Length: 399
Image 1 (cartoon, rainbow, N blue to C red):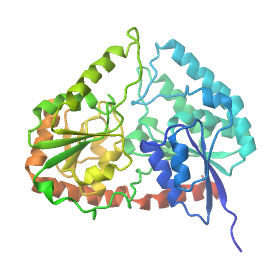
Image 2: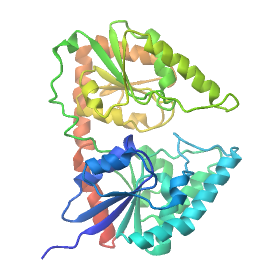
Image 3: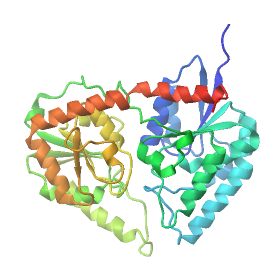
């Protein structure tokens, strides 16, 4: 006699790329198909829809104009935060949260009626609140480092909502968990890396020893360290070739907007990069493993605390990683063991780290092997067992 499958509705608010999407994709792909029936509900149309379809995952875009026209999520992370003095944005965010939490989300959940709601970001606390109004349990997956803020008021509110409304919390790092401070219901489960795509047995070209290559995949994103990367180029040895991957476009801004000058500065930096013969422009790619396999080392010069998926993927391919010493990064990279940490916002320090590993291939190889050991222990698909353990705890009523 077959056991009835548990219906899990996953809520995803973002696009079809980036760490949060990939982590969700790998979790769903590896769930026990005999126990669970997963389905994704997107809050906005994005490339995520096509990507889920391509992976044969049930997915729909929410049939509600409110969500399609508004993306004023309750954001309060170190990567993206609305300043307290941005009054109009704060008002829009509060307006969005209340209408979603008290009306639109409960209405949708009553129609969907899942056995469990799985929220793929800390910005979805409105849906966590809504589940308690309709009697549905939920898991919230903290993908972002919650910002501490000036006074900690919004972090206090977010923590209060999650503590009272979410049944279980999953954090992608101890740093993320410590920022939330809900240890009694939080489990740290590190991100999963695709073992098929990031396979250390990928054939590396013979000229790898002749042409030293590094990979930066943050595009022009300031948070991911584009400015530090661009300023470090002049200090990098001339025999090192650089792969530049990621989103290289810029949002449209007008001269009176606060971010206008910063964007214009980055445009000029990118123009100089295009003219540099040692830099190979990749842009956006869904095959980053191809370039990572040919690199000596990857770099993640983040300007703010942020979990680096590229570091995990480097370890999976037995490559060391270099990253800035932002808060929480020492949890991922052990300095001098599986990679190097450099002083945040210091281009010369970044370049020195790159030059050192590219000039000492035996050290880079030893660090890469150490990273692979860490990957097998922390970041493999075996983590799905931990996710399913939490699911069983909730469905058995023991949470």
